[in-house]
Length: 361
Image (cartoon, rainbow, N blue to C red):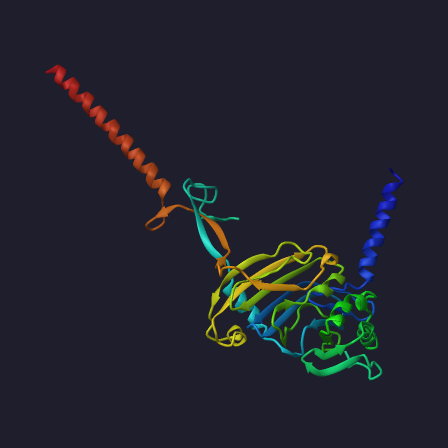
């Protein structure tokens, strides 16, 4: 047993060192790859999806960590796509729209933070363009959007995509060509993005600027298959704007998707109103965890639910039951009981006194 302990400690140390050296390939809807031996990990990907039955728009924002100064990712799309910078204020607006409802849960007897125990009140409950030599890769367009170098590509050979990225100086997972093959078979196209901050020495960390991708689609699909290459657990936050309440057709290898908000919204102005085209839409907010990304076996396909049932989370906080200007009900109750007892005692004493007076007479 004593011999096993040093061996176990050595194994743990080697594991930690490997985690520091090897880059983390992580992305909620594509394959994000850093340059050289840099590390980058996507802690969470939050996306807004707008679908009107014909056109799909995805506004995505990554929250990343690591020390990479450059990175790239590719996202398969079922049709010809356009790409532009998204409005970061959109996510704050969505947080406000889907904020949990605060509800009070009252209790009768005072607790530690209530008078007379204390003076407190209540407690909370709790890249570069593709090489001309790569004939299997076609360039539909290329734009420079802030810190993003965006290339829209077609490919008839999954290895050509891998070669395209490798020639731009990025270390790629060997599995990339294999994982892209299903999209090549379906003749999907690709959005390749190179994140290269213009500020010298700036690393990719925190919330990146959002990108807005638009393409035609007769079904609501959210590309997720390439996420199976991620080395760390993934977290997805999805806001869906459509005509009806939407739900994933299956968990695709992750935990059960959780609806955190569902309801009709009609913002008058702002980025959500612009994305919705100024029309009322049904907003569905979905959270999902992928503890083992390697189990992801498909893209998310979302469908309308049988009923547009609204839902809003409730956060309960405990409050002492009071009436009027904050008078505790327990105090009134106890006072009333004491007064009743005092009245009963007074009446009893008075009655006995009368009886003694009557006897004396």
